[in-house]
Image (cartoon, rainbow, N blue to C red; front, side):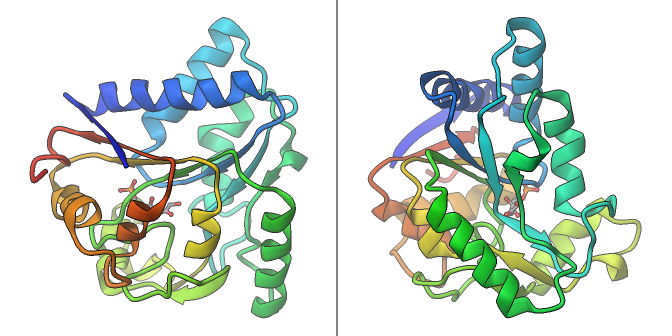
Length: 240
Ligand code: F6R
């Protein structure tokens, strides 16, 4: 794992943007695996600024997202589909039909997971962006998810529900289940870019980088990926 430590979140976002831009410019038909959450927001801001000032085109880019809350429609303001539209897609020249995410309102969970697995097979990702859960999760693969897992529905842990409550008006509004891409599929991306910011990620960063590779810490599997970059700010990297 290549590790880049930055002085703060702003520098982290700028460095992440350099990696993402390189991917998009070197292959205008690239497939980007994208993430939601607070951490990638700075990177997305840089991508939008760059599109506005330099016209970097996303017209042929396709994206696949990691996860979606179960029960939320793509127009629900807390859904990840809505998040991606508002924070990135609607500001770029990307085709909405080239952006993929699990359908949170799918009635048949198995069929939806099967559909997404097939899509992931057909669209190998050039880069997979990840955030890091404070409990070491990647996407919504919580501790003790098998490394061989494909797309599945998860019961979110109390810890994750608490972490995500800041984005809802009340903790009771946070969905208890989500669709998530599996660990096996994350590992199939040609390159992985994982971002970690702030003090509450310090233990997870330490365990991911220096801990044993174990399903108890899902992110520890990234030690086995041949082309993984971690960009962490000083606080998140404070235990390294
Ligand atoms: C989001 C996702 C999650 C987040 C993680 C960190 O699509 O899959 O694994 O990346 O929970 O979230 P933030 O960035 O909000 O700290």
